[in-house]
Image (cartoon, rainbow, N blue to C red):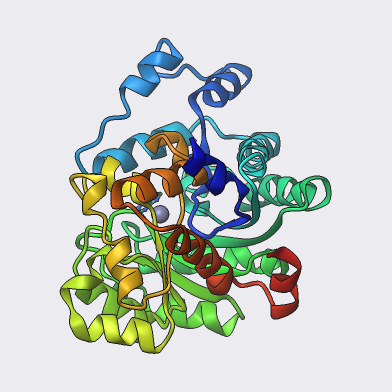
Length: 326
Ligand code: ES4
Ligand code: ZN
């Protein structure tokens, strides 16, 4: 369709993508086989059939199980490289991607194995595909702040290749305030800060992410529209929201795409952006997220372009880098 052609033609930046969430069943089977791991599924079709979720936690349980087959540096390279070649074909020219070190270190895979594989693929994409990148290390919020501190410590030898810190996993019952001290310590190390907030959790968690963690962007932030003062704060301080529409439908954060808040957010002057979150699990990379949103909400060409521009504006590229990319 014409809309798909337009979206394909726009250079895009992806700011909300979990590398472990880009793990396609085909690659999962291939890596399981070479690592002599038996998956609890007998075919790629039966894996895909299991991807039906009623909430965030049901997804996370399957997402963490899938990551268990990743053991060696080559596995992390292959995972990251598959994602980068995919988005290259969609005219994504800049990525700021998350990885969850604790998903791997908790089961005995060393931090350096994980980050070296990821970093090698990102560097190759820079050279071979002209994709620029930033790397964001996320703390798992269902684990303790002490465990996050250990992860911070493990990251320090790799400080030069990690740009920022994120906070993800089970939101309800794990408010941003739980990670106040480790975010403060992370900022002292020079890391930029973001956090998932207001995906399933309330607008209060977005306030906490801003006031207590001092984040520069909010991942998701869907729930902000229930709080007028918060909307004003986001607009005044140019705090971007990295929205993930197909994720929101898959996890029942919204019931249908035409209920997605992104159009209202743009109307209110919020720097809203669109991303894919965990595309292997939610069935859509960047172009599909733009397409489904634009179609369901009847977005104008100007609004679609605004979403793409917002992502470059909200990115961590320097002004000079941005001019090179758009
Ligand atoms: C996630 Cl969609 C989502 N929300 C919170 N944490 C996550 N980790 C990976 N995907
Ligand atoms: Zn996410």
